[in-house]
Figure 1: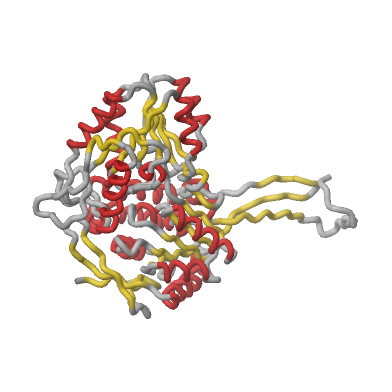
Figure 2: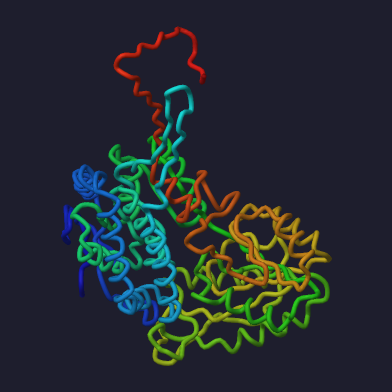
Length: 497
């Protein structure tokens, strides 16, 4: 059984870690690896390596950085299948879903390859008599990323390619539940020509997280995870004087208006609710049906029953297991509580056993009808293959329901009316909106992030916001007077003339 080590200063190392944790294969329920859990001294070693590397990397030309980024892009593309297999084995998601995750991460790398254009400053000639003003952006220093289990390859790629392209050095703390892809990617960075120490990986639990948040050598922290932890990360890291972007949880609604194509809506509700076993922060977990909705519930329940659930490596599987036995138990308990509170289970995924994988962490696609906003299945972020169906009298009530929810990550509307769609997108208090698109994850040249309890800090992740987050601006005001000319200085506040 392999032991997954840290990656510090260009090499695998056990550091001073004496603790470890099991890494399970969700499809079988068996243990497949052991991962080391970092101590504060391991985090400090990574920060010291990153600090030493920053001195040279920050001064590397844009041409040098871009060359490394393009080489890294080619290596990730060439090894995308291997990365997807690692993700599938440790997370449980099907290979096609894991491949899609790698592709979306690759798009951010491609965005970062354009860093010379993205870091262009401004210049104002003759802003005052004989005075010019210009601006440019510089890297922060050592920055860190703390990333979740549900996208072990993609979410780190939302962070480190942009941070490194901007001239920073990086310390990654991936999820200890599926950690192997981080080490694989670290070796690709090295092969791409990235100097040792620029990208480091420290595995661990809360001990390593707190060491990152408190370390005085780290200038900024990026985080994606649950809302309680995002709030904690933001509070502790900002108290330590760091920049923080902390993306939290979600309760994403899809509103289906009476004029929508019901077959189209049903297909996309099933895909968005049950893809990746519902373990994604942009999954649709609440369908808000406006008007007479029984037909749509029947369509969704019938399609949910047809989803092929199985191990991620099986090409026939459309949905894999959830990440742990504890996650399976929590999801099934929430379904049971919803039933007790008065909801109707239209498609039941509890107790699912896959032949040959009876010990796997499988929960089947579940549809719960007649859910109210007071029920636990609505208020909780289930993070599993469960779709709650809520009834609404009209579109205004549906918008009000979304706006009353503490989360504001993503939402969608299904309609054939441009006027209704426009009223919806202007009325909801949510950061990312889809019109007949159930999972509106922006392309890499935009930025990803929600509102309300789905985001702590001002900055969204990747895209233009990512460049701004990992750099800081300098503005230079300069004068080059002729040597024979003398200007009389004034004691009053300087103004343009």
